[in-house]
Length: 398
Ligand SMILES: Cc1ncc(COP(=O)(O)O)c(C=O)c1O
Image (cartoon, rainbow, N blue to C red):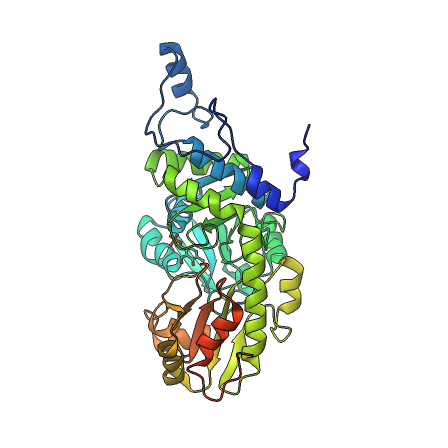
């Protein structure tokens, strides 16, 4: 008998979760059905009485293609169970709905995705839930922000766009000492590069839209954790309905099959590009945790298998120089998205972080000359050549 618990990440990504039907299909089918039939009235009653999701009743609750994606992602993250959602934001919302009630509080890194900040500060607060935003690396600030109403600590690591690293071991120790749940958004690393649950986190959330798909085709998300916690999240998704469609789950299953290969390739290209950018006179600073010059490089090495595909750099010439680089590209996609096989370039201060005031941007370190690149899977020489076009006296390309 195969010992599936000993499988490596690539094998898990290809082989976990598939329940073949009587047709003996090789690849995972898409179950496009909204409901399921029962063998008898008694069988229907038995299935309806069981709310664990063991029996297929209705595809808002469970679907075999979605379940295959859930089982595979849970195995990759080292969690007991995953619950798929319609988007990354639906995953975060479902965690809030599952574990918070009026009067509760969240402590959240201030360096998280803008919509996460919006959800916590502009929407959850309407339901009596308060969020304290703290500096990602300042453990004393995390501790000081906790009180007897705190229920969740929420963090993204590495942060976007400045690649700051959260010490997940230290945050998990803090969470455990106070009986809180540590929630980690792992969409920049994926389980191919970082396993937050192994480092002590309680819950992992994903925007599957990013690297889990990896080809910029689908919106989706997931929550991963213990059976007990995921039963709560399942209850929210089953009742409130932010579920994943079977077709999207099938596309994400294809993405997972190549996850490790892709993440290794993204990481290798990003590291080389970051190293070359650091040598450019027109570049004031490069933000990438894989660089030995990164202040938390040693911590990153300890908790990540690779450093990922997203890097940022600040043009010495400010916004004008940054826009010149963007407008001189002929291949890179000028878009706010990331985690795609195609390289993308973004000017955070006028797009993803434009809603912040100049003072707030300065406080979090987002300069007008900052550019973020999600390094794709094109030939690296072509990415370098495309970026170099707009840089004065640049020797990026070899
Ligand atoms: C780190 C992070 N978390 C969550 C999300 C939200 O995911 P989605 O767009 O799938 O809702 C994003 C989207 O960009 C993200 O970058």
